[in-house]
Image (cartoon, rainbow, N blue to C red; front, side, top):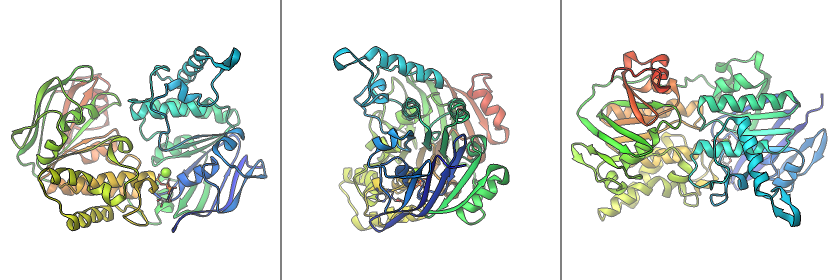
Length: 499
Ligand SMILES: Nc1ncnc2c1ncn2[C@@H]1O[C@H](COP(=O)(O)OP(=O)(O)OP(=O)(O)O)[C@@H](O)[C@H]1O
Ligand SMILES: [Mg+2]
């Protein structure tokens, strides 16, 4: 059978970086095809070639067996290729519906935009996805999960023959992933070809019929899912045996470092109280939207709160003052790294040292040389794949950008580290490295508060699991009693476990 879309011998370089070398792919009608590889393997670059964002330096694209050249994303769209990009591309000041129908709004007489038709079609798309977002609200301020859902609705609004999804599920919760998969399966059964990129192998195995593995920009293998196992795919991907989870180091918890007392932000979370000791890793679990990130942001001072207090090492923290929080030894690795974590046009090195500059310059100190070393050290430990540390962060692959944000906060040497979804978008090889780092920091006496939606990560890493449900802390489960059932029960509000 002729592939709908094929890529043959494609090379693509950015300056000295060879992102793709002899890349290959064949997509068939009626199949969901997974593309896997480590951070920086070239997956998103391949997607951008299919989407007409980049032209290949060598090789060719075939549509129904015929060579094609896409001069722009509009060309690729016209050929029936819809793409959900890894980084949301919404315009913050446009409404949700306007974002979805950008440049092709339904018109009524005299070429005036038919706003009610647009709203209706947006609601129809959201209905298919089971999503509740107001089509008229601006995109600004949407959570990353909602931004991703708008991107998905946008891709579905084209009658695509090929649907490309570059890590669409990274920010979504289980229910949302299931709905997306149901829609993708329906499209596939109607004869569309799906290309699916994810670092979550359970999803790959749940959705896809074939898998293509890339390494260092090259095609390595393509096989039927029936011939593959997760371990086998991982081995092909990284070229060695690894485990996704680093075994936790046992440490004796020390003094209480972080105390949160009756913290309340109306409409977000209510009367949240807990402590974290030095040497302890405490997970904050719960469903997307339970208020976990909001609590972390309020503790750090990015958001204000209406009641309650935060103490670090016994000293009360001023609300709404992140520099004071940093000076007190607190760090927050935020969930939305692109909007809150990085300055895209600045170099990797500058990004990695930003908060430190912020803290140090308040104290009237700046250490040029040592800063550079420490940021570079962290970048190396986290295996950031970059040509030079002086390159702008915008040129890094998605997962490598995440690592820079981690490096940036780790280099502040915090005593209390709050980290929101520590391994989202990070490949299986580096995941265990991040876990190792967290474990090691805890063993050095750091208090770690980890917001995570990944149950294996929560159960594998945490000394204690705090569970939030609809803005309230509903459970505090010690390690030896935490399992999938106890956490999910509490997270879905089915049981208020003993606190
Ligand atoms: N615009 C660009 N300028 C310079 N280098 C780039 C650019 N885009 C990508 N690269 C480089 O190309 C390589 C492949 O990146 P790509 O984004 O395709 O990786 P990926 O497989 O999608 O990784 P991830 O899993 O982290 O998303 C990386 O080394 C990246 O730094
Ligand atoms: Mg990518």
